[in-house]
Image (cartoon, rainbow, N blue to C red):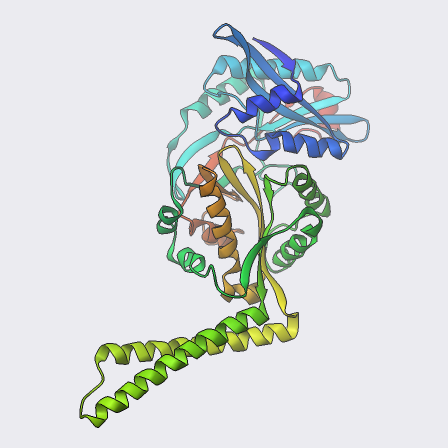
Length: 425
């Protein structure tokens, strides 16, 4: 085995062949970081397999500027390798640390592998991952330590817990049956006149930013920084076929026109039953129970539509004819769709905008053979008092499972200097 810098094309080929790679280890991430002026290196281990040299482990290493004159190496959700191969794990990190020491400005290495700590059924742990024990033993041998911090405590820490739904082999019909009733109700609103999902272009990301800012103002979620939003916008420009920003939009005029059409149909239906009832009474007969029930249902539906029309006219008067209801940001990874950011306007929740966004993306996922629908970061606190209790409740409606990773790890490259400058710990 030998450790080496990889060409961008060799790295891209390697990750394309992997079963699972999250976006901070994808070429589109490196391209956008380089576009910002950040130094990013593709590194890996090459070994002879079946008589040919092949990449067997790799990582995107971002060189984070530190105190102007120094840097810290960061690997987010990587390296990408077989963590059950302890020899490979040890060789990779030994070699990476040796490689980083050649840079006199380098202070420390920080990374968080995409490796499960334990497994879950929904939010209930079902057992430890033995590969995590192998990894931790290798880290202890190398003197690499676990950093006991979570993403909600420090902005430079990656999320350790996800909530992910396995959708491998599912049709959209199967998928719809597998989710909670409230999700199915929202999905069934697809096709409602005046409500549609459209996809933002990169120069429209201010719309998504407004939604996220509004959501942060009324909840305990962290507000997305301007820099982070600019980065995602840049990734959309780099890979428009892998970065999606769907928004649900209400056109009040079209919605009201749809209500008017349905109301007219219901009114005609009620009138027809009334007329039929009068004719029966003239003959001394009674209206059938089935017809009475149908008329009552039509009247009830008409009352619901009248309330919705009144609500919509009120929204139109205050917010205009076209109203954004909800929006999200998704990134497509190998075999996986990551639901990274989301927000909605509480006053418009009755239009089920956020569920229509998820329907559109799950339809896309099924059409493209995606195996995992990753709703991404949660705190790992499953109590009702958790800061993200509402977020977790929403995500659990999709009937997935928690993923708990082994967390963030760090190794000082220049221990005394790294500690003095706060690059570790």
